[in-house]
Length: 183
Image 1 (cartoon, rainbow, N blue to C red):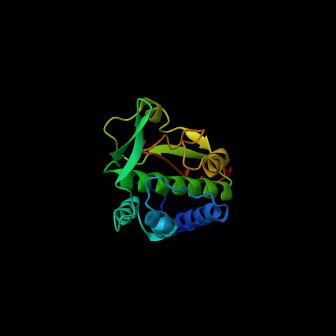
Image 2 (image 1 turned 135 degrees about the horizontal axis):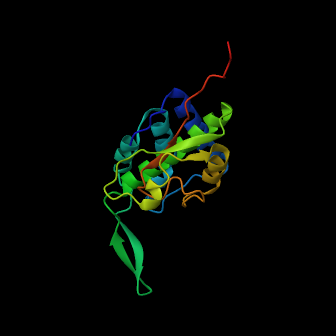
Image 3 (image 1 turned 90 degrees about the horizontal axis):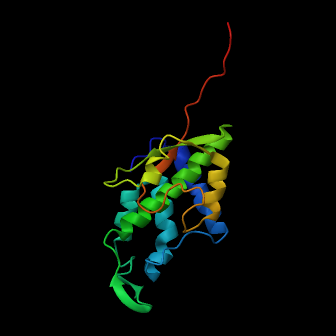
């Protein structure tokens, strides 16, 4: 994934947003994490926000049985065990890292008195969803998106950014423009 605005300031705000969720007991806890994974998840996520990437977070999730090997599913109303997808660590790591990145970008935009952020493709996908493609280049209200992501924990946000697992969408800051002056 490509995060053009990822710098020390953004990482610090990502950590603030993770603490925000932890203080409210709202941090998303995937049902694909084992008990050991659930225990260490907040530290792994914070460490990735501080100086890692979605890839380094996924790598940590693969260690020491932090992800479940199987989960329950249903067919014809009957439960049955099935293997957790092999890409589950990447899906979780990319999704949550991106959500906190987006939250940080929105918070920073608001601190800079910028009302909007811009949607872009952070990850190339083989078959992009039409609803995702239509959002690229659009501007989104930073405050509404920040509030949406703070309340839509573990579910797709109402504004559809990011647009579900593996959508590849994120947001970036708008260029800072100098005030217009006549000389």
